[in-house]
Image 1: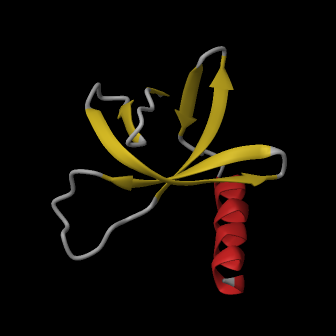
Image 2 (image 1 turned 60 degrees about the vertical axis):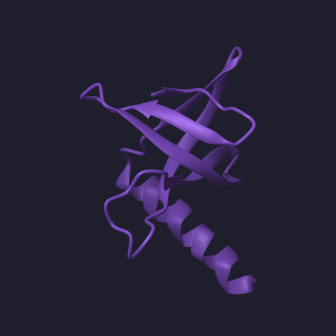
Length: 89
């Protein structure tokens, strides 16, 4: 997925189905020499609870790429790291 970042830190990604989805960039963390983006959906039908989306962030030339983390083990390690950061704060 490719994305464009503007001053408001709104990210537009395209799903595999060709649907454009907007996210607000919440935070970028570094873990195991890789960067990961924490994203909040901009338009959500669930007004009760905001779900944070975790994606791998890479830079290719002048573009940022937001990639789905397909490796369950990698996703679990990053999630646990984020939870440990939250617990420290």
